[in-house]
Image (cartoon, rainbow, N blue to C red; front, side):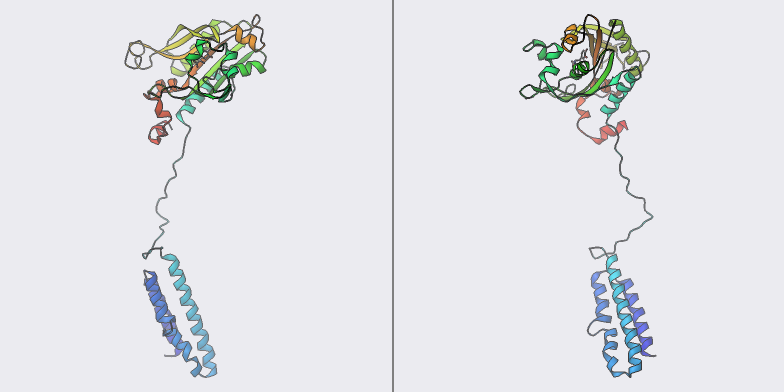
Length: 337
Ligand code: DAH
């Protein structure tokens, strides 16, 4: 056997040992035994000087090639070893890890549903700021300073005259100020009150207010739009009960109950055996409010209403604790994909 044959046999052996090596230490052993000071390829390179010129060139080139090839294989094998001492395999045929997709929060879904229903009846959508002035939140809505009606809404003051809005009704004032009748708008948004947090109350909650101002608007228009909304939202069979109430910005005012969606009005735990569930406040816009924004209350009249979105979502989806909306527990939220 010639030296050239020896070199190719050595190279094959080295490759075989590299392919079997399962640790960095084993790869190092291969390097030492072929390329180290006393390695087999090194020995051939060392003896080159003893050979005739012609053979020296040929064998030298072959031995150098073998050395580079073995080194390259060792480097490649290293790349395939994990940081530990065992091999890591990537199996491209295994199924991947699915990235869970988010979805619209249930409160936003219900808000969108409510808005869509009114949008279908010709209402535009308007938004206002979460931080309001006392003027828009109270004064322009006919709550005089120090009037006890302000106690109905336990208010979070930010600084001076600024408050976290306690309802979305201030957007009514903002829109009435900058438009001319006929004005037909709904105003979804977040509201804030200094409530003790419980199963039924939270410091942050969502409302949708709606209103219409035009010539010749009466209570029958208000009733008509609310009945249409409740039937679209809760089903054709739902009944409405208008109960007289008080809000500073409407006169007359009412609260509206719908027949219990669980028992249909027979009486159950949800409706506290009354057969009715309260869902909104409403009324005819107080002439004082129209005068304040510069709309002639002799010529124009209007109705307004305000819905609590959490309340409606809880009824529609039979949710028994308002805090669930805000705890960000995916087990709860993902039920409403
Ligand atoms: N803003 C009232 C509240 O938060 C709800 C309300 C009642 C809104 C009557 C209205 C309305 O627009 O006309 O308690």
